[in-house]
Length: 372
Image 1: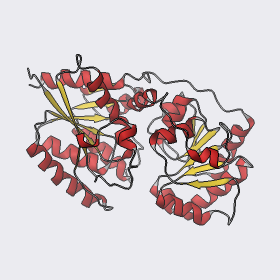
Image 2: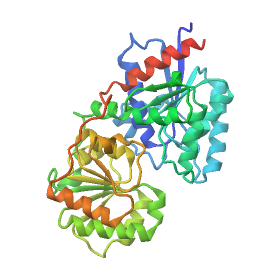
Image 3: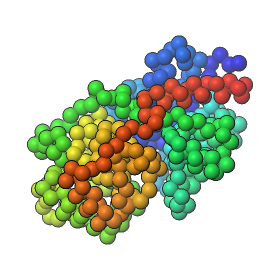
Image 4: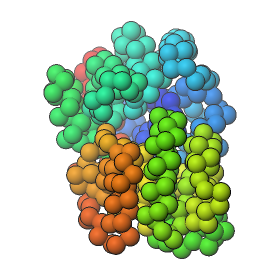
């Protein structure tokens, strides 16, 4: 039995940090329970990555000097995969590692997973068993590869478990641990920061809609995006819309908006705590982000998702989320329900209790020890 277990946690994008932060806190705050675990956080990108706001690590109480940055930057998926594989292989040459935890479904996540298995190390997938069932989506290929390689599949709920079982995963390696994103939300309930834009725009709580857009395919389709924006502006009437957008989405939306629309406000990305405040106090949310839909379900805020599927179906079956696809009419009808106050009631899915990180670390410790 090993005295110290060296666990590497690999992140490849902003949302990954938000999901793995509770693992860091659990080790720091439970020295007796997890004294045998030494975590190392690895980010495949660079320290000045434009997709990660400067305040993210400080907001999540993760010291930057405790993160290893591989420094890989590329817009070409296959090139990125190869570069991350090479860099992560070199990292493992220099750092003792008993297990690697990879998060979600990025190309960098898949790259780290492949290297881990080639090294014969224990591989765990956090948020396993999510599928769109569209093999033309690069992320779907990543999910299939990562789940297929992983020794431990940590699922958020029954939906993920059913998918893993249907695809032939050994039941002994599948664990329902709950939604680790909710650990982060619960941790920040009393730490949210009111963004200055609310005062600047003279907006009151529950007196505006929050809008986010990240999916590249939708951003690039000017016809679909234009039709959705037209429905959004028409159905929302005089309710102010606060659009928090990154550069590519900002440019696409700005080009399609009427020359002057007094109720649609284009705003730069916010820090994590400020963004949480904005969405928590919104009358409703329009988004294409699964993470935002999960946060909305936790906060009991009506959420409209611009997609025909979600990897987190519990946000629809039990939460406050509805799927409208890329259909302007469905978007309009959903906004009308929101305006009329007839939105469905939602409740928290099972194991959204803020204890997921503890379950993950406990299982990791037990399973790694079995393998030694």
